[in-house]
Each structure stands twice: as structure tokens, then as C-alpha cells.
Amino acid sequence: MDRGRNLDAGNTALITDTGSDVPADWRPDNLRIVEIAVNFGQEPFDQSQGIGAFYQRLAESEVVPTTAQPSAGELEEEFRAALDDFEHAIVLHIPGKLSGTVTAAREAARAIGDERLAVFDCSSVSAGLTLLVRRVQQRLERGATFGEVDSFIAHFNAGQRTVFTLDTLEFLRRGGRIGKAQALAGSLLKVRPILEVADGEVSPVGRVRGEGKLFSAIRDYVEEHSEPGRPLRVVYAHARRAEAIDDLRLAVESARPAAVTEGIVEIGPVIGTHGGPGTLGAAFFHDPLDA
Image (cartoon, rainbow, N blue to C red):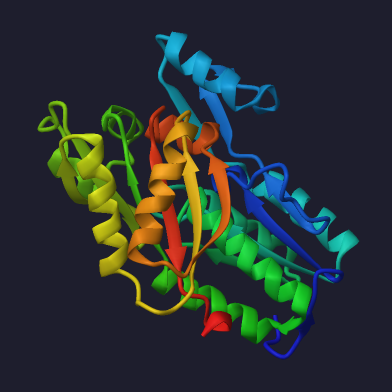
């Protein structure tokens, strides 16, 4: 896409996938969400049943769920439909190191061969991807060139941070998404890991014993990876732990009083397959527009 092309929320489709966990109450008219399949063995899970049904099935099933990227053909259909309705399309997918979705999307884009379509490999998932989608949409609503949007996405990918904790590493281990956090596996007896999504993969930050130390560790992480005195855009995420969001927000805001809550997401089936219930985290970054 030509960098000088003018984009706005009326002429540009914004496409992401269900690994973003964009909440239902924030879905602008130009947003389209591609489904990443979740399967219990050979049986597809119907994600329209809702998040609660997924976690109930996860707790009751002896079958370990898996995720499956959409095919290039399926994505080609989605992209063509978006380009029928809009002049341009910006596609924001979960990291290529965690899913083959973006690879399939690029294959679909090549098949279409339309320079009005741009596909991006993003650096985070769930809260982090929701945060990116929201801030790209904010630029579309203001009006921006493709070059400005492209530069912003690169800035976000380099600067965003996502910190989170899990009840167990077992779901990451089963799904093969444990990455550098493998070093923690087998050593967490009544200890909660602190992890980050960095450079598109899961990496360990530390481990703590007890809820009080957990929130202190997240506070320290935010303080280390952000700048004082600048607004900090934040999206919070949980998997069946809504009661912990207030404590998590207090931890972030105690480190950065200028933090702005962009939203709270409940982790859905795609990311929940790999994180499991009890996952809690925050994604944050400094938006240049706030400087």
C-alpha cells in the first residue's frame, strides 16, 4: 500500500483474529474478527457458546484442547469480502512465533494481489493485541496516512509490554507455546510465575509466592518498562479472575499514576487454551500521540 494513501474509519476495514480477545462491547463498524478454531480432539468448540462455556468444558474434559489457524483460503474469502465493503484493509494478527495465522494471511494477500491490503505480524496477544487494535482505530477515526499507521504499528511492536501470571504452566506446556519459560517448568510448587510476551514469544520474568508479592512484582515490572510522567495506555486481561482486576489496576497505577485504562478483556478460548483459568495480566505502552 502506498504510504501516502489516506485512511479513515469509513474507508478502511480493520481485521484481527480471536486471539485478540477484543470485547463485544467495543467493536466498531469497520472491525472484522477472523476466528482461530479451538478443538477438543476432533470436535470443534463452538465459540458462540461464550467464554464461560469454554472454561467449563476445559475443566470437565479429559481431552486437551488445541487451536488451529484459519486456512489461507478462508482468510482470502475474509479479505476479499472486506475489500468489497471498504477501500482498504489493515490486518493485525497474533505473533507468527505463536501461530501460523499471519503466514496464512500473507499467503492469502499474495493470492489476492491487491495493494489496498496490508498484513501485519503483531508482537502480542489478548490485551496487547486489543490495545493495538484500539489505538490503530483511534488513528483511523482521526484520519491518517498508511505511512503513519505503518510507522505506529512498528513503534507499538517494539515498545509494548505484556506482563502476566498463570496458575500453572501446564496449559502452555501442553500447547507447545512455553518458549523460554520452559526453564520454569517443574519448579513451581505453590509459586506463581511472572511472564511477558516479548518479541512474539513467552519469556519468564520471575516467580513469587503469594498474591501480595505477585502484585508488587507486576508493579515493579511496569515501573522498569515505562517512563514516569507520561500517560501510559493499558488494557487488563483475566481468565475467570475478574475479582483480581482492581488489585492489578492499583499495582499499575501505583507505578504510573498517569496510566489510562483502555479496556478490560476476558481471555477467550484461543488464548485460554494455552494459559488456562486464573491467567491475569496487563498490556501497556506509551502512545506518541500522548507525548
